Each structure stands twice: as structure tokens, then as C-alpha cells.
Length: 269
Image 1 (tube, rainbow, N blue to C red):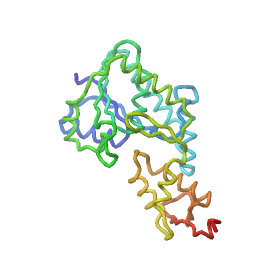
Image 2: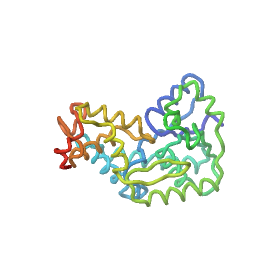
Image 3: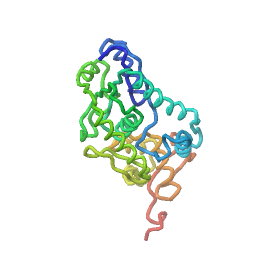
Image 4: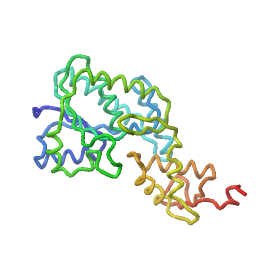
């Protein structure tokens, strides 16, 4: 692919590793467009509308009440989709680095939905096959920079029919009112906000432990790349519901401890 191609990547860490790969010569130097919003959590239905950026800002403010993100951050994210569309219209080649997890797959579907109907030069590097063991590498950020040349050699051209299918899939997924999404057996599955609550509870017992320890353990055991912010929020929800005991500032897991309530404390007899 020509050096003037724009590389599209999801996540700050992945973009950083790709930059290192370019600096080290594993991948030819080229512009990189980095996307940040993760689509595995939170409603997606308003994206693409006038309220899209604000809707995502409201969701993340719920998870980060003490440091809510600005709407401007999500306006910038929306603008990046416009940049992709304009580049494709102008005939600029696009190369997308795609992971095998729900955020990456939904991001890919949304990108397809903004591309022009006419044939465009879009290629994708799939860093892992769907269904890969969750503990193994399935996102670009899990590879060393020197490995990116080998990954780049696997890039494949995406035809118009596939792009149309992906765009239709995005519209269908975005319309489902779900709080958690997973990439399972090559498809997106939809769940409620509380889907991983059982996983969080399984990390707790009758002894006090740092809240961050329970959150980190849940992240490690999770079958998706869902960040600590989401698990921190759900742990707070469990504490507010009395399903775990929380000792310390509620909004500061780094300063808090958690444990399961005893049977008498939980009201079970």
C-alpha cells in the first residue's frame, strides 16, 4: 500500500505502539488517525445524530461523576468519522488495524457506515481471528512494535459488498438498547449493564480487600476488553445496592476496600 495511506486505529495505547512501529521502520511512516470511544458499553443509538456526542458524554459522566469528560472530546471523535469519509471520497487509501473484541468490531462497522457507496481503497489488518482465547493477543496494543510489519503483510482488501454488510450491521447493533456488548463466535451479543456484576462479586469474599484489586481481577477474568472505569462504576452500584460492603470514599476506589456482606448483613436468614 502506498505510503500516503491513512492508518486508522482504536485506542491511545494501540496508536502509540503503531507510532513506535513506524519510527522503528517496521511499518512505513504514514498519517495515523486515532479513535478513542469504546463501544462495548453504553447506548449507541444516538451516534450519528445531533445529540450523538452529548449522549456519549452523558454516559461517561455517569461512570466518572467526579471528572466527567467534556462533550468536546466526543465532538472531536465524531469529527474523525467525517475525516475518514472525506479522505475516502478523495481517493485516499485507508488501512484499519482491527482487533477481535466488541469495541473494535463495532468501531469497524461504524466506519463502514460512513464510507461512500462508490468503491474505495480500504484494507484491514485483522490482528487475531474471532474466537481467540481472551487471554491471548487480539488487539494491536498487545503486539510489540517489531511485529507490526508481519501483521501488515496480512492486510486484505475490503470489497464494497462487505462494507455494505458491515454498515447494515452497525445500524442494527446501534438500535439495540443494551449496556454491554460482547464479541462471541464472530458476532456481537447484547446484554444489560449488570452483565458482569456476577464476575465482580466472584472476586470478593468475606475479607476486606482493596477495591482496585477486585476491579483488576474482574478485568483480568473478563472475556472482553472492558476498562477499569466501567468495573469501578458497577462495583459502586453493587455497594449502593448492599451486595458488597464498601469502606472509604465511594468515588475513589484507590482509597477504598470492599468485601461481601455476612448473611445477617445482607438480610439473608
